[in-house]
Length: 116
Image (tube, rainbow, N blue to C red):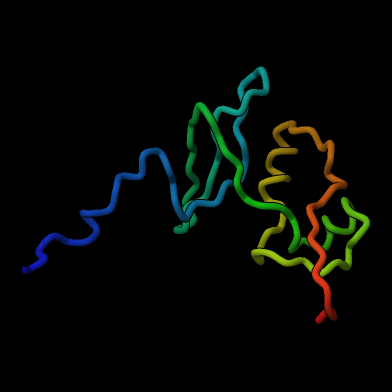
């Protein structure tokens, strides 16, 4: 067998997904409904993405000491999880009018044994 087809041709189409792009600001209509977002590509280009639905899947703010101090009673807690979760998606949602209810609650798991 010889494999002549470039692998890039075998990748499925994006089907509305935009990768390696950072969301910067949600776009709302005159009624406050989210209708898209402004984003920045990995090349630094500004991109407007119009959408019927926007899913914010950026994680929490466990790597943001300022937000941990302001919104929890545990600013010095040892956070276990994916590094880099600084609350950008949460701030973006709040700027678009999302409620701040429940922000004082965090999901915690306790591990027995000494802390590092």
